[in-house]
Every structure is written in structure tokens, then in C-alpha cells.
Amino acid sequence: MSLIVYGVPLSPYVRKLRLCLAEKQLDYQLVIVLPFDQPAWFKKLNPLGRIPAMKDGDLTLADSSVICQYLEDKYCELTPLLGQTAEQHAKVRWLEKYADYELAPLVTFTLFQQRIINPSMGHLCDEPSVMSALNEKLPIHFDYLEHTLGNAKFFVADTLSLADLAFASQMVNMEHAGEQLDAQRWPSLSALYTRIKAGASMADLLQGEQKILSSLKKATSKQASFEI
Ligand SMILES: N[C@@H](CCC(=O)N[C@@H](CS)C(=O)NCC(=O)O)C(=O)O
Image (tube, rainbow, N blue to C red; front, side, top):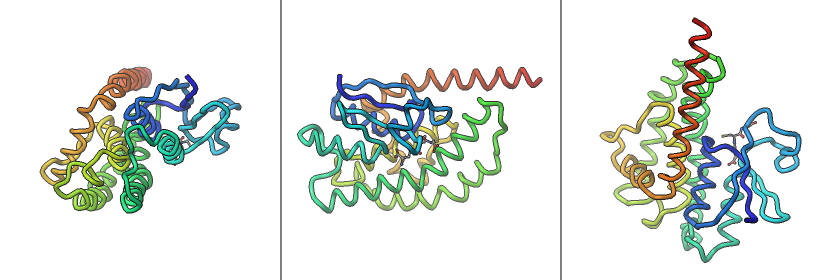
């Protein structure tokens, strides 16, 4: 097996990359590297210290989008995930970027960080910032994405692409944090997320993720009983 992915399953960027690999049916080894306290050797793979990184033989790469683009270029015959035309490529990249850079700060680095990571490390959850992300900041983005999706099954060309995988990857962290998309207000987005979650690639990953999530929650209750 020549492909090695470095990262942790609960990272939305690692999840997006693993979904891309699963859709293309490419085998890989996952080497666990946390987003903090990283071993010195990881800096050689990504001097920025962010996960995921990947190794394919002698080639090392970092950044989920760059890695997925590489896989797309290298294995173009396997399930294309960037669309077929220049226009479709551009739309997929835009929506992937939108999920990675607009949803992530609110969903992953606020909701998930505050509700799951902080308590598991003995830090308080800043619930007002969670509420502000949920009620004030995220709806504008969901409105835009709902409008962009319209009645289609997938974001671009009615075919699964990295745009859908990037969006769903963030929604998983929202669900891990105990929140759901409002299906009344954003019916198409909710249906899209449900469809991706029911697919084999995501269902497979989520099984493993639930175990990690439970141990983080156990760590949280140990912290709490220690404090009491
Ligand atoms: N644009 C990067 C973002 C990766 C990223 O921010 N990963 C987080 C974990 S979810 C991380 O490693 N954070 C550690 C840090 O920023 O020091 C990608 O798509 O791979």
C-alpha cells in the first residue's frame, strides 16, 4: 500500500480526504497525527503542522484540497469528483473552498471545538459563542448553500463531487457537537447530507468516529467527576 494519510478521523479535512479515497476505492494507511503536540518528523511533511498530510511513494503533500486534486489528476479514471468541464471544476472548487473556509470556522472550530474538544481537555465550553455561531452566523451560509443547491441532488451537475463531500464533512462535526441542520428551513441541504451519510463511504467512516467520540465524552465525564 503506497498511500499514507496522516491525521485524525474527527478532522473534517481528513474526513473529506478519506471520503475522496473511499469513493475512488483507493487503499491507504491512516497514521494518527493529532492537530497539536505533533512529532517533530511531521513538520517535514507539513511545516504548517496541519492535518491532513499524505505520502505517495516519494511524494509528500499537505492540505486536503491539494491532496484531493492530486488524486483526481493521478487517478482520473476512478470516480471523478471535480466535475467534467472547466465550469463544473470551478463550481466544485468554489463550494469546496466555501465549506472549508466559511463553514469550518463556525462549525468545526467553534461548535465542535467548544462542545467536544474543550470539555474533553478540561476546558470550559464557551456556550455564548456556540449560540452566536448557530443562530447568527451560520444561517446566512446555509441560506446561500440551500439556494445554490436548489432542487438538485448534488451541488454540481447532479453528481457527487468534492463540493458535497466538503459540505458533508463539516455537517458531521456539527452533528458530533449535538446540532442538526433545520430540515424545515434548509430542506435540500438536509436531504443532501442525509443522502451522503447513508452512502457506504461515509457510513464506514462514521462507525469508527463514533467510538472516538464516545471516548472523548468519557474523558469529559472523568474531568467533570474529578472537578466535583
Ligand atoms: N486547509 C487545510 C486546513 C487543515 C486544518 O486546519 N487542519 C486542522 C485540524 S481540523 C489542524 O491541523 N489544525 C492545527 C493547526 O492549525 O495548528 C486543509 O484543507 O487541509
